[in-house]
Length: 291
Image 1 (cartoon, one colour):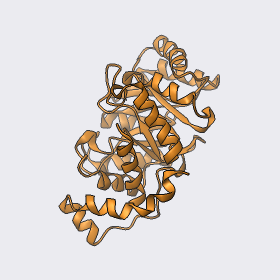
Image 2: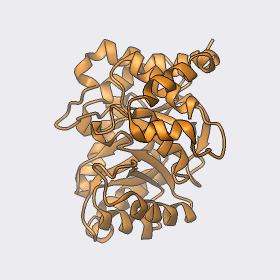
Image 3: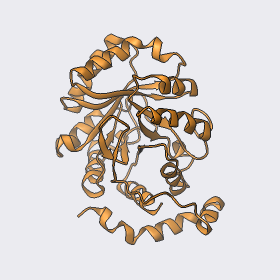
Image 4: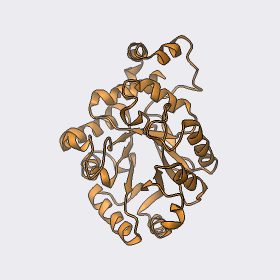
């Protein structure tokens, strides 16, 4: 039985304990702004017009990730693989968010060996900026992940306003890979407002990983500005996956508020948060249900 089946018995107590921690949250407890509907972490969502169906919550693997390591991979392979499997079996999470720079491919591969491949959405990212390098990355990533195809491959951490012309060769390689069925969809993650606007203007971008939280922490601009750009993306049918939901730790003492903001923003199809324990992951699931 999925843990989600009895979440409703504990979410009220969990939410009340957190709500006492901040003045903003206490005010919300008195007169909360209603969300348009109930949400769960395991809700099946569709990423824009991509046709990809997956869970609302993605299991992130890149907390403080760079140089081939992250807080998740530093847990040790057995611990992180168990966390992925627990998320899949107990909480219905079917979205694995990886990246070359996190060093998470081999851990994701170990988890994929124990669950049906077609039941999980695998997203990963390349930092390579040359066509030849990305072509090699695609082959290497599939070997490391132990898969025939990658659901979503993103150009990682785009920062230039003109990236859609500067890296046209890389985009062409990813388009070719999609035509061959090696990847299902391509897109980018952005780390400046100029890059985000370029992604919004590009028909090539099918999936965008965007930074969004209520305090503007580690974002490309203030939340309202970013939401305006994301709305342009949604109007074009791009799949939108949120990241930095907890502001890279700045909202770690206000996780329920941050999750509620992401759900109520109305601009995210799904979002990714990296946990480092089953307790953290279960809490995230509960925050979504409590919202």
